[in-house]
Amino acid sequence: MAADGRQDAPEEPAGGAQAWSGRFSEPVSELVQRYTASVGFDHRLAEYDIEGSLAHARMLHGAGIIDVGDLTAIESGLEQIRGEIRSGRFVWRLELEDVHLNIEKRLTALVGDAGKRLHTARSRNDQVATDVRLYLRASIDRIVGLLHGMQHALVDLAEQHADTAMPGFTHLQVAQPIVLGHHLMAYFEMLKRDVERLADCRKRVNRLPLGAAALAGTSYPIDREAVARQLGFDGVCANSLDAVSDRDFAIEFCAAAALVMTHLSRLSEELILWMNPSFGFIDIADRFCTGSSIMPQKKNPDVPELVRGKTGRVNGHLVALLTLMKAQPLAYNKDNQEDKEPLFDTVETLADTLRVYAAMLRGVRVDAEAMRAAAMRGHATATDLADYLTKKGLPFREAHEAVARAVRFADECGQDLGALALTDLRRFSPLIDDDVYAVLTLEGSVRSRDHIGGTAPAQVRAAVGRAREWLSRP
Image (cartoon, rainbow, N blue to C red; front, side, top):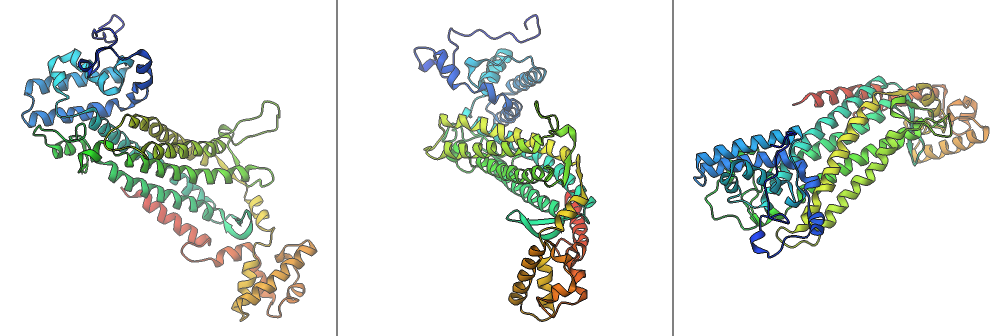
């Protein structure tokens, strides 16, 4: 150990010997080292690399390939390396290219020949594929937990506003009255599908590549199923060529992540609009907003704006991975080094976004009166009037036409449809009577949608109950 507690680097020949150095007559140039090295980002895989190596070593011993002395030394050395990494004392060396060789070289420095035997019956090709799958499996579990956190925030806000009337929009024009709780529960359903997609993706992530070696398998008597059991995989990849070259699981995750971000971006767009004084539906807590350097009155919804922007970033990572794989022949190619940065950034961007979004939703204040006033504009109950006439025997198409003419009249008078006098409404159909006002109110309109999936407050509360039950399942 050096005096400052950091590890001493083992001596290397000039230029840094590589795992394949005996084949070459000159060292890799420093320019190529910098260009090809991945240790600057794949050090995130260190914990998973150690877990995979421990399982591999135990399998090698169980198969009689290494003795108990080598296994004990490898286990001890890897545990020491794990401690050095966690404490920040581990020295990551660029000339060793990646996380795998950095750990292997340190292990050899600590335990000698036993460290050199660890790589028996495996290649970096199946090693990195295993590490990435372990990393992504853990990341999916973490992200699903964060999705549940955001769903809880949505459900809590929806329950508070099961009776809060607001305009529902199509084409961003006032369409029909709904309640805010119903609107928010639509996003709960989107995120529920996201959780289901990630759970399904996890099944394909959770297959073990280790044992495929470079591409063709190995001549050693290995036990891949034992390694899979140790590492918690559901099974092994069935074809060695596919095992080392497959990145479908990463692409599938990025596709699911892009959908999550798209859902959050849609909600962000609405929050941004609703916070605008022209709407005035909501206010977002100051701690999630910023001001202007020149306009002192400004309060900017930076968090939802940035979520909207970061969605493009995550979508770009999906396209990058698809493009990365589109022309690769079997089996492993160096191109696949480029899978990690988009994947890592997707995981981290999505996790950070979900964490901040759930906190922000708990800081949203709703102006119920502003929402109600907006729902009273734009003839939101016109469809209710058409349904009223249809229930009195008028064919729906004729009812639709009669109400359309009534809406035009109301526009000419500068009034909302529900504010017209009974005598004016009867000009468009003699079937209209004074009971019509019960259906032209916002409360009457939303209460009438009293079925599963409808906006009636009773149905919103029922949906909230179902959501809480779903969230409570293990």
